[in-house]
Amino acid sequence: MALGRSRRNRTQFIPPKLQITSMMDMFTIILIFLLFSFSNDIQAIKIDKDIQLPKSSAQTDYSDTLRLVVSQDKLWLGDEIVDRIEDGKIIGLSQINVQDSNLYQKLCTYREKTLHGGKGEAKSNQILFLCDRRLSFRTINNVIKTASMAGFPNFQFGVLKQ
Amino acid sequence: MKNSLRSRKKVSEEIDLDMVPIMNMFLVLIPFLLMSASFFHLRAINTSVPVLAQGSSLQEEKSDIKLTVIVELEEKGIHLSAISDEVDSSVIDSFEEQVAVTDSDEYPMDALSTSLRRIKAQYPASDTLIIIPESNVIYDTIIRTMDVARSSDESELFPNVVLSGKVG
Image (cartoon, rainbow over all chains, first blue to last red; front, side):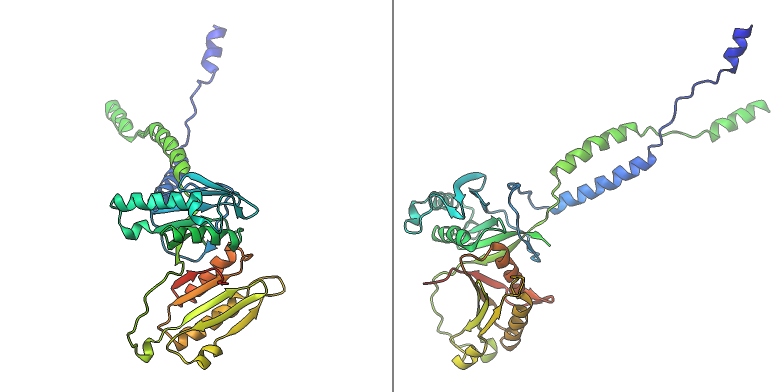
């Protein structure tokens, strides 16, 4: 009898209800923001985390062209490492015999490929140049000169939006 | 009577939407989008290097006279000058200017902007500017000079910026 009363007195366990409405609101906002920022980009570019790009007030979008990336210790052409840089000097890039350098030869090969591939002159002779902001003009000039000699006189300097 | 009360109770009962599957979907979508999202917006500055060009023999009207402005970034400051085949050399010489770096080794971009605006006001058809940095000038300074050269106070100055090394 006593047992029956105590059972009756015991409060029944009710599983707690989670209030997820506010969380849903937050997730919806984040989702919309991410979807919008996703749609704004032309093409995402992956670059080395050590590269510090300069900031600029430029508003022009970059084109999907050949990428030439210069960090403090490496030189990339697209995703491929072409040369190493030591103390601002590009190893394997001589001022006298530019034609013998790895960069020049690779650029010439790319140019011939794109011309024969039918991508057109306008697109093929432009380079998206991404360079560390701490590098001196001495290093940059060597790369730019080599590229222009290989038939790429037009550059797009990649910068971060200010 | 009792029956009608029971049915009214049933109608007023709240319907709970099952949000858990939507939450699950969000939890999958958000990390995926966060991974692929880019938080640094990349922009581009169009430039070129000097190339050999054939000279034009066409006579242009005075309002179409173009000057090519030269900005030399030196260790001690900025040297500004201009070149043109159509303008008298005395006028060209009047544009020559040397602005020294500030005490904190900053390049005087405001002074450069003022000088460029003055040239643009006199020769509005001019659109080309050549930047000649010394070998130890860093890339960041070149980009800042390009920014000043292209536009000032939302007005376009010299949209064609050419980057060149020092000859000789």
